[in-house]
Length: 129
Image (tube, rainbow, N blue to C red; front, side):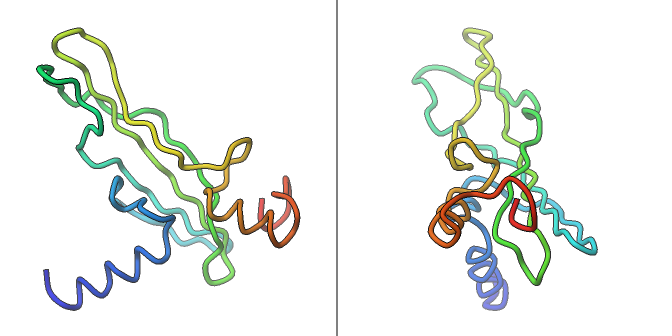
């Protein structure tokens, strides 16, 4: 990786929720007048594989929309797709589990904590919803 790529990656890691890019890769984005939509797909890595089992990719779970910190006066929505694998030994479908949103919200954990500290709650409507 070049120095410029390392600097850009370090900067991008500041924009997204902590450790998100360890588990997901940015596969696209769309800038609209009032929104930025960032598409992220889970990396091909099972966090807790069972010993002696083999797994094959089996598509993705339905996309999850997560509201994150605004950027340049635009709402930021993370469109996250988690992978699904099939355990060849049992036929069971498995996926990794992450704490991507604050409980009871569609907001990233860090953004929800910020809103609770500043506003006293996570709003249901308006710019920060």
